[in-house]
Amino acid sequence: MSEEYIKSIIKAQGPLTIAQYMAICLSDSEHGYYIKNIPLGKEGDFITSPEISQMFGELLGIWSATMWQNMDMPDDIAIVELGPGKGTLMSDFLRGTENVPGFHDSISVHLVEISPALKEAQKKTLEDFDIDIEWHQTFSEIPKKPSIIIGNEFFDALPIHQFVKTVGGWREKMVVETEDGILNFSLSPTETTSCALIPENLRNSPEDSVVEVCPSMIVIAQEIAAHIIENGGVALFIDYGYEESLLKSTFQAVKDHKFHDPLQNPCEADLTTFVDFSAIKKVAKENKINVHGCIDQADLLKKLGIDVRAKMLSQNASEKQKQEIELQLERIIGENQMGRLFKCLALSNPLLPTPIGFEDDPITDV
Ligand code: SAH
Image 1 (cartoon, rainbow, N blue to C red):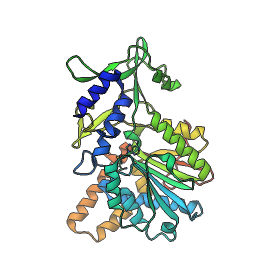
Image 2: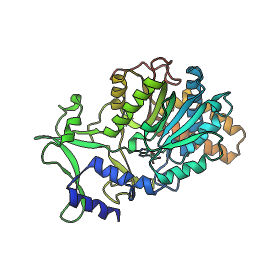
Image 3: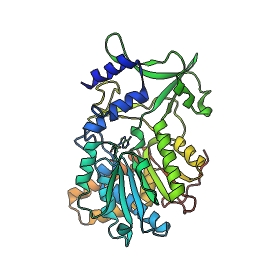
Image 4: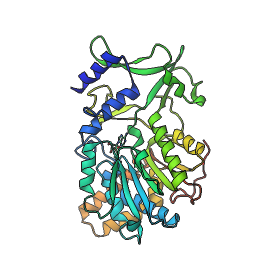
């Protein structure tokens, strides 16, 4: 059982950092949640915007085709998706851009996915498209050519370290096994080497503050920024997150569409954290690429014409389907729903105009 597996690692190596715990739970080659399951969709543990409505992928397709036009329509461009789930977003993306003259002839699709189960699902979803599609284990394998990079709910699944400010200084939050044989949190007795990752501006935070750092996100953001500078292109990330540290834990688990204790049923629940968009912005700035946003998901989708698209879909729909479209629309752009909770951040090569949907936003300084 996966809980015993985690305990055996703790017995052999000592307490795990939250980053190690998340990495094992989500992507261990045998036990990992993403490796052995199809975690998302109605039958899975959580649902994402592209799984709620086809309009999401269609509009990101239109966003990308417009960016391609702004790049003077290169005839060999990579469309890259990070963590494509069941392939639904890409399927709607490709269907939604079928009529953009020259676009499909110019693109190859590159899916970055670690999960064999999801890779199979993506293959099936995308089998009818007559487009060159390649799968990659990491972003570093993406061919060196102009690229449009998309990631929806990708960064929130990457492992984070958590640090807590105590009277004695910063300590790292660890996962231990108690004497009663239960997995629990505990603080490191002294500073760990990872404490060096705490950003300078947060070092003086008050006692009990929690700071989260995601080194693997910073590495991928760095690779993406370098790729965009060298090869041209843009990236768009959509996730639940913040631009200013909340100074509290955002580590959570979701199972059967409900919140769950992250230390219960390890490897059987999705583990996520809020994304620290300021860390991505900092990397972009250091690499001298342009940053746009964050803006709310509702604002981006509205600027891309989601209301008009919903009306078009409703025109040929039955009463029941019309109601469903309304509900889907409400879920992905609603005020108290994903529309405001989810944020969009775009990065672009400085030679390109501001990406559509982000025009009114000043380029903010970090
Ligand atoms: N974007 C999809 C799925 C989000 S779930 C949607 O919106 O529906 C997270 C996705 O990222 C899954 O496909 C998961 O297998 C993948 N993933 C998680 N960690 C990854 C990693 N380190 N590298 C590549 N893919 C990863």
